[in-house]
Amino acid sequence: MDCDLTDRTALITGAGRGMGKKTAKTFARNGADVVINDVDPDVAEETAAEVRDLGVEAVGIAADVSDAAEVQAMVERATEELGPIDVLVNNAGVGDAGPFVDDSYDDTFELNLDVHLYGSLNCTRAVIDGMVERGYGKVVNITSIHTKNGVGMSPAYDVGKYSLLGLTKSLALELGREGVRVNAVAPGWVNTRMTEGFSDDVRQQILDNNPVGRLAEPEDIANAVTFLASPASDYINGHELRVDGGQVPIDSWRLDNR
Ligand SMILES: NC(=O)c1ccc[n+]([C@@H]2O[C@H](COP(=O)([O-])OP(=O)(O)OC[C@H]3O[C@@H](n4cnc5c(N)ncnc54)[C@H](O)[C@@H]3O)[C@@H](O)[C@H]2O)c1
Image (cartoon, rainbow, N blue to C red):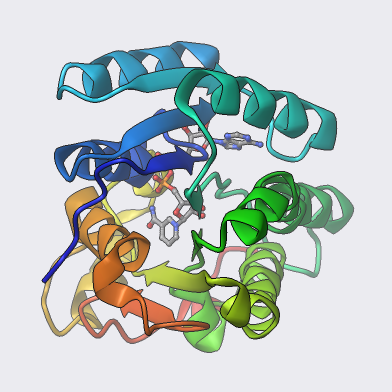
């Protein structure tokens, strides 16, 4: 199976931590040069240095993906330093969520749509013309277990990720004949900063409803993203690849967390 990414340049958003960081290192081990984006400049730089230690080119660029002007400037600088972007991973994300009733939902909806939907749109817009001109590109969007059945008590996150899945399906149809593949990876619950604050009750529900009996590790997700970024997946388009151990969504809607 050919997962070689030599001579490819990848842009991974939110790659300063978590599964984005792991994906950057996995891409590097498969030969890609990597642009490490994060809204937090310190972690972007740290990750870029660790990726360079693996023997490829890497640059850390701080930008808020929900700001179209910052994204445009990031892609211009990235292209100057590492060449045109062949692979885009829309990974930047926020875990902010709460129930629809009683929540300050205007803020949480705005944040979730800004980062998950508009952030991915901004980044895709900034690289897509180049991909179409060159007749080659891979876009991998990070959705979630939340697109399996909704999760409840987190409608803003559910809507953010379902809208990103819709974008994935639609762009796959539009761009397939241009040599661009657009797919999604839907992680189950993963051991990253985002799940650190889960209560024992929620953690136990996740484990009770997971046939594999554990949370995912960032590496589990990075492997799937690498596959979808590589020539091995050239005939896969518009697909959402679940990497969740067969997780059954938890009954979070039953939790007494109002
Ligand atoms: N951890 C999980 O259980 C889980 C499950 C399913 C999906 N996801 C999704 O996976 C992706 C990665 O999450 P993670 O678990 O690695 O979380 P994480 O918090 O470890 O990493 C997310 C990174 O995104 C960055 N970021 C946030 N907003 C940004 C913005 N506006 N612009 C640029 N960077 C920004 C953060 O600074 C952070 O470094 C997210 O899209 C998340 O929604 C996570």
